[in-house]
Amino acid sequence: MRIKASTGSNSIACVYVSEFDNGSLVVMVESVQPPLPRNKKWVLIVSTLFGCPVQCPMCDAGGHYRGRLSKKEIFDQLDFLVKSRFPDGKIPVEKFKVQFARMGEPSFNPSVLEVLEELPLRYNAPGLIPCISTIAPSGASSFFEELLRIKRKTYSCGNFQMQFSIHTTDRELRDRLMPVNKWDLPQIARYCNEFWQQADRKITLNFALVRGMPVDSEELQKHFDPERFLMKLTPLNPTYAAARNGLVSQIDSSWDETRCEIVNGLRKAGYEVIVSIGEMEENLIGSNCGQYLTEHLATERRLIDSYSYDIKNHS
Image 1: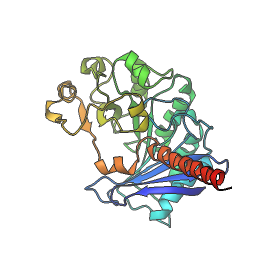
Image 2 (image 1 turned 45 degrees about the horizontal axis):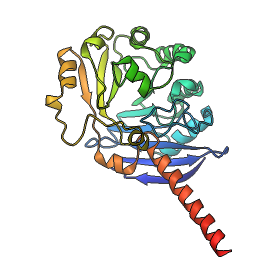
Image 3 (image 1 turned 90 degrees about the horizontal axis):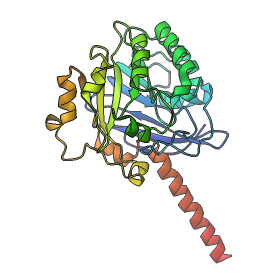
Image 4 (image 1 turned 90 degrees about the vertical axis):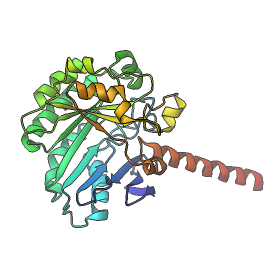
């Protein structure tokens, strides 16, 4: 693995574009969560696919799909990020979160399961908390069955975070945002009710709030027990894909959480609600949904075009 480009800030997030032997590029990220210092919380976000076949209209990682990363290639990313901070592999971090959520839907890659089984043996990390963030594709049932076994064996008692991307309770609009066959809300609820055990972390339902796309607390109450689920609301990331497809975030500079009907409705229904706006500097860094990779490729394309122009006009 070779690092092709990097950007960012040690105080927020660092983004890396890496190239593997097949010539494919992926993005990986390390970040902290101010005001917490790195020894309190440190987050690594790695890619699981070369590109992504789903092509969600708000994600820059879609398109140019070139297959799955191997277990070794996923660990190559983690080893680089870990050893850049902790060369001996000892990670004295209270909450060390490893997210399989950068480029690619993780349930499309069985190698993610192999990594999860080996992860606690790879590093000395008492605070390890793996996180799977998924849209729950319909054809990935065997992945989720095996994930359930691994979680029960290795990551019980709150040592695993499960997150489902919902975004809206309107089925047609949800299909627009995630254009692939996937579990509906009742199917997600049935799996989660088997997945969740006493002392586990609550399962996260994530909503990147898009203007014009509803989040109905009454619909969610039909399927998801507030004792087992929490709702995480985030802005729609300012990706190139979102701008190209006319998607606008409900959360902007004038947004007031206390006046938001969605937030108030969810809390009234008994849900724990996390509003995760993050740092504006992350948008400048380009750490969102493959955004920096898109920017890097565009820069390379401009350099190639400029080089070709110079040759053509000076030969």
